[in-house]
Amino acid sequence: MKTIFFLVALITSFPPSAIADDKPITLKAMGSFYVGGQRIEITHSGGAGANRPGHIWDGGMYVRYMIPAGRPKAAVVMWSGGCHTGKSFETTPDGREGWDTIFVRAGHPVYIVDATYRGRSPISQESVIAVRNGDAAPRTLPNLLTCDEELAAPETGGFRLRHSNFPIEALDQYMAQLVPDWFFSEQNGPGPNSKALIALLEKIGPSVVLAHSQGGLTVYPTLIARPDLFKAYVAVEALGSCNAITQAGVQFPDSVPVLLMAGDPIAAGAPPPFGIDGCKKVAAANPKLKLTVDWLPEAGIRGNSHMMMLDRNNKGIADRIMKWIDSHRSR
Image 1 (cartoon, helix red, strand yellow):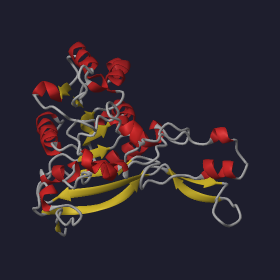
Image 2 (tube, rainbow, N blue to C red):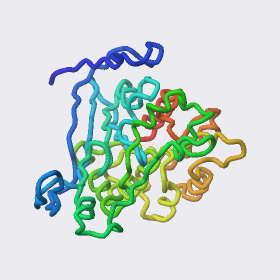
Image 3 (cartoon, one colour):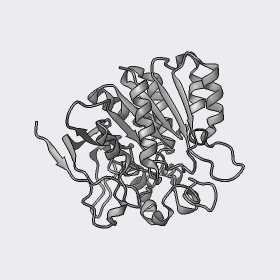
Image 4 (tube, helix red, strand yellow):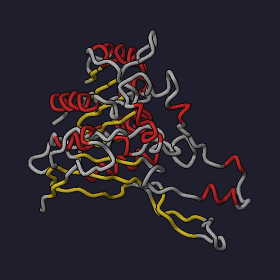
């Protein structure tokens, strides 16, 4: 097996002070592949030529991986939130290292995914072209979520980007990475995403899965259905956290350690974000479950936005998560 030397600091668009660590990373392997999905027939090919039927790969998921040299720690799959791709775990908007290379430096193989129907994962144009050609009603068009600046970065609320640890001076770099989100459309949803996640974990073996925000809507049902594929689950302000645990009841696996993490509400008087208080009650009521509730302000860590993997203290938060993984993951 060839060893790859990967120099993270080869970034010319940011000053040297923006780089968190300019030491080379030694990798055993790096690359990308696709998992999940199926070959389907479409009847609307679109384009400039005459409409014709054809076949595409639908519901697949793009995966990029880096495996460090030496004896690796637990593999970590990173799943982004709504309107985000795997880019949210890569270089921060202001040019610092992202969680992908921070975790790799610490010895974890890292698998970054673009959720199905997002980023570099394939999208079927059938539902759009059928309407364009008059063969389907407009109501059949996909329901796309748009994360515009008014939703993501208002003066208060949103993703809590302003007046927080988020590098707001690089907001344009952040907004450029947001994409239309098909998750709440009939064409997509948790089904194909869960199928793709299972395919990935069956391919690489049981791993730690780290999900952010909307990613929880895919990872929780997958965890409940296939706990054998999880060494641990890290839910970073993940949707559905406490409800998923409560609704599953006795079906929620007690064999998988779960970390429920939330940042700072930022606004004075605002409640803890993402129902973290409710998660504390769920953890207290279910002592057999391996639940760790980590509300960062209670640990004296203030100012973290919803996008804590991009915040100025992202390395400190990553170190905190990795310390928990090392002490809690299933062997």
